[in-house]
Amino acid sequence: MDKVNFYIDGFNIYHAIDRLNNNKLKWINYYDLCKSLLKDNEIINKVYYFSAYAFWKPYSQNKHYIFIQALKYFNVEVVLGNFKKKSKNLIIKDNNGNIIKYNYEYHEEKESDVNIAIYLVRDACNRNCDKAILLSGDSDLVPAIKMAKEENADLKVGVVVPPNVQASSLKNISDFDIKLLKIDISSFLLPNSIKLETGHTIICPKDWQ
Image 1 (cartoon, rainbow, N blue to C red):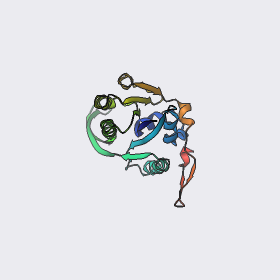
Image 2 (image 1 turned 90 degrees about the horizontal axis):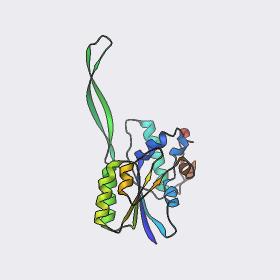
Image 3 (image 1 turned 90 degrees about the vertical axis):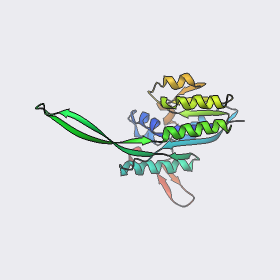
Image 4 (image 1 turned 180 degrees about the vertical axis):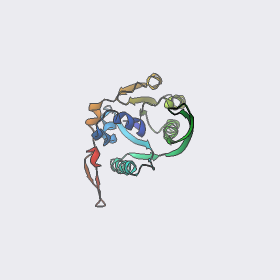
């Protein structure tokens, strides 16, 4: 049986789902979705989920934490990066034409694309799998795919492209591509309630039910 590794770009998929305006789809069972993409002669070796906590948004962070615990229950390995606080100096004019200098602070997600690249190339070099499938539409991953294929000519690399995302550069460099549709996501959702062996229960956030 051929071993398949999956690399999920958490925020890239999340934002694509968010644009579908159906919060229920955010409670996605990535393991079962990945399993549905296998051929008869393939088995899952690893499912990696790459993301980071938005620490400055406590409510969102809590939902994300709950979601990650659910993913772990279903054998998804979670790799966390972080957000870095950054700022920009903006110059604007008010209604009277006066120039106003404004410092704009924002947060930029770090490490996820680097982590995906590292894991993919490592697995290619170590021949940990026969096929690698990335769930992402981020063109920044093109160099990683190129390197993985250079280091392991036998490795097949495919991409699963999120809804309403083109990802032409990813498709061009990959051995195959699959378009993820809204109906695909809705077919693979986590249970609203997950009972753990510890006696605790994971409950889907109310605004995702």
